[in-house]
Length: 108
Length: 121
Picture: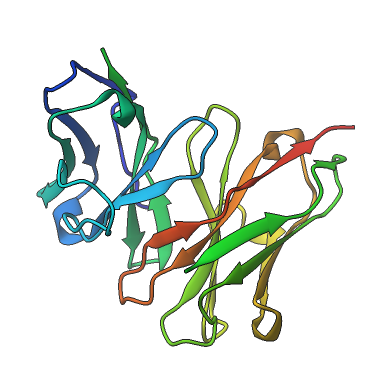
C-alpha cells in the first residue's frame, strides 16, 4: 500500500515561513490534500489538489507537489497556526485513502 | 451548509461490535460523486482512514481492517453507519465521519466533530 512520510515536527518563529513536507513514491503524479488539526478539534481542509485553497483559508497557506515530495508552505506564520498538519492522497491503484503520519508545527 | 455528526457508544467492551452512525445535512448521498468516509484517531496519534461509501453504494475499506468493517448508507435518513467487529483496546480512538467532495479525486472537505470511543472491560 502507498505510504506518506512526514517529519514529526517543524518549528518556526512568528513571521517566518514554515515548510512541511510529505514524501511518497512519485507523489508528484498524485493530488495531495492537507489538513490542519488543532488540539481537541476536528481536522480542517487547508489545501486540496496540491495547491488550491478552500474559501476562508488565508492566502498565507500554499502548496506544491513534484517528484517524490509535496510541500505545505505557511508564510508569515502566526501563533494561531500552531497545530498538527496531515497530508492525504487517494491511491488510485487500490481506490484507498491514505494519510501521512502528521507534523506538529510549533511556533516559537 | 454541510454538517455531519457522529453518534454511538462511548464505551465498548473487548470483543464487542461497535456501531457508529453519521447523520449529515446539507448534501445528498444520492448525488453523483459524493461520498462519506470514516477516519479515526487514537489519542495522541495520527489520522487513519477506515472506510468510504460512494453515492452509488460502492464501498472501500482500509486493507488492514477490511475483515472487521462494514459501511452502509440510508439515503432517506441522511445517515451512514459503520460497524466494527471484535473491538480491542487498541481501537480506542476518536472516530470521525467526513464528506467526500464529488470530484474524480476525492478529499474530505467537511468533518464531523468526532466521537471518542473507549474499549475497556
